[in-house]
Structures are given as C-alpha cells and as structure tokens.
Length: 154
Image (cartoon, rainbow, N blue to C red):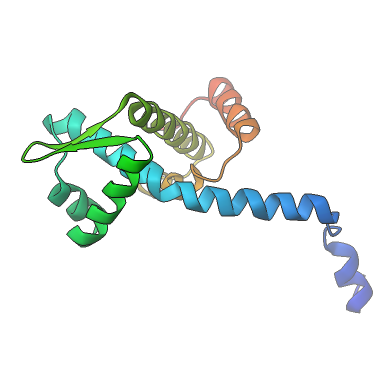
C-alpha cells in the first residue's frame, strides 16, 4: 500500500483513552522515582565500595553541584530513605537499602538482557541505566527467562 491509506494501515491502532491515560500516568510516576532510585543506588554503591557515602562523592559521580545533592538528600531523608549524620556522611535506612537493592536488580536484569541479545558491554551498561526505571515487572520476568535460556553474551 502507498499513500495516506498505506501509511495509516501500517500504524498501530490508537489505544483506548483509559489505557492511554494509564500509560502516561505510569511514565510520569517512573520519571519522578527515577532520580530517587539513582541516588539511593549510588549511595549504596559508594558505601559498598569505600565504606562511606559523602555528599561531595555523590555530586562528583552524578556530575551535579553539591547544593543540588543537598536538596535531594533532604527529600530522601523526608521520605525515610537516608539519614545524614554531621561529619559522618550519608547512611541508607532499611527502606533505602531495599530500594537500592531493587534498583540494582532491575539494572542487572536489563543489562544482562541487552548483553544476551548482542549489545556491547558499555552500551548495555549505559542503556540499562535509563531503561531500568521504566520497565514493568512483566517485562523484567520475560528478560529473566530470556537470560536463563540464552545466557548473557560476554
């Protein structure tokens, strides 16, 4: 088919209004939580790697200014995910640790799936950083099954 009719026929049907609203609601929610997850995951990584997480280290790793980190740490503290102790750094609460572990696991699965389908290690790591926040649990389960069947390419 060619022309307008062919182009229209090739497009996917427009989702019903409720489905459309839900998909955008979910995307907005994921965008709001993405930064929180990145922060707690990085804090956990810094603690695991060097025994502590400091505001300056978070700022350097994220490429943002310290006042930006300070503002986010206040938000994370208000949400019960971190505790800050003067002159002692940043600590994750049990809730913060659980969120960080969940984010790490999603990242691991997405990156593993990308590697399994042939994406190179660096691109898979970078792409997984964005995808991990937007992937549904159903999709993660499919990724896990694919990795189990086909393995992760090295």
